[in-house]
Length: 115
Image (cartoon, rainbow, N blue to C red; front, side, top):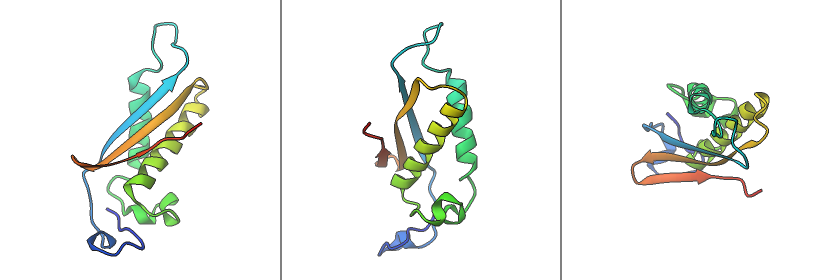
């Protein structure tokens, strides 16, 4: 659940979504068996990150104590947390390209870094 700060409308009240997240990574090279990264690793990272948000009032989590818990900022949070995990596990050649966060089938926000 979350509540948008500074929003003038229903979404300023506590409400929830069944989020759908797309995590897109890229690399300039493949590993010895032709993969950028094993999907199991990406799922592990994403599950760890989603556990930080799942069944919580997102506004009260550390990152969102300051950042408005919009779909855009949730996408940014997932992007940055995934990057941290990739680099901590020495996947230096892999970067997050984009994160899409869907609140509904037709409402989606993306975050990507123009490097």
